[in-house]
Amino acid sequence: MQQKTKKQVILITDGDHVAQHVVEEAARRVGGRCISASGGNPSEIDAPALIELIHDAEGEPVLVMVDDAGTRRKGPGEKLIEQLATEDSIELLGVLAVASHTAKVEGVP
Image 1 (spheres, rainbow, N blue to C red):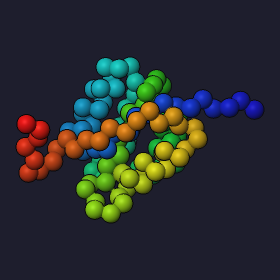
Image 2 (image 1 turned 180 degrees about the vertical axis):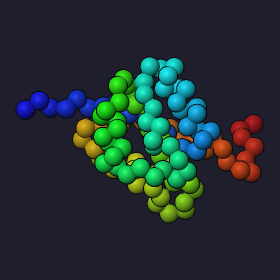
Image 3 (image 1 turned 135 degrees about the horizontal axis):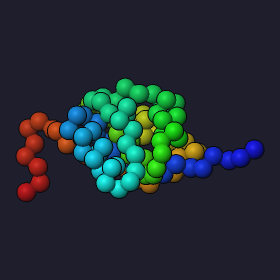
């Protein structure tokens, strides 16, 4: 039986329309793939479906958005991070913490 190759994945902790546009462009620029279905505020895709899309993606790294819409407790984005981080078929290269379209924030001086 042939073993599946681990897919290289980078998680981005934002999935709103602003972040999604930027992540899709970043994936194009680095020759990777963005799982656009992982976008949303909050993320609505479940882990099994997301893992399947990751493995079906051509090219690496695979950029995946996980968003919990600012939930104070563990939200859907954080649950996805936990599930993907423990998935044997995924090599998690890193998690990029982003808040791209946040109200009442002026940014970094």
